[in-house]
Image 1 (cartoon, rainbow, N blue to C red):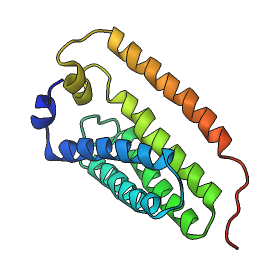
Image 2 (cartoon, one colour):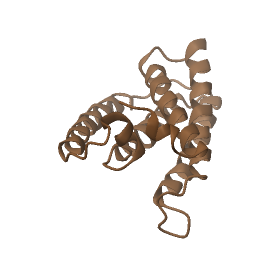
Image 3 (cartoon, rainbow, N blue to C red):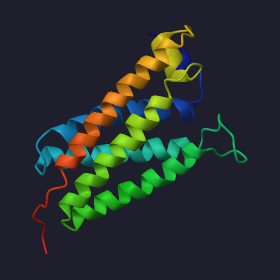
Length: 168
């Protein structure tokens, strides 16, 4: 593992990468611990801020240009910002089940699923973690890990769809 590919890239990619890694770790902690207490709310606020930084920084990254300077990842960023606003709004309105589902899907889609593609050969995260080795087995292993994460999250999301009390 080497940080050199990250050091050698643009400031926007550095901010984006560090924010995404921190959001991945903190989001996992917030999602898997007890809900509703002071630590959950504080961690959630920090996570939303980190995710906002991930999304905003992505608009300054133009390595994949499919429509002018834009790519599908920019649509994901806009959708993630909308989901974050919706998830926070649901919590404020006491719609806890909607809040949980929105935040879990946002974590899964914006960090786990999108993060999978950052480990494709030639990408910065791939070079950081695996060095210069261009082996086809690595994407397969990362894909298998992503598949396991999808199965786990699908199962976990199915368990959170039970009705919960919310404030009127």
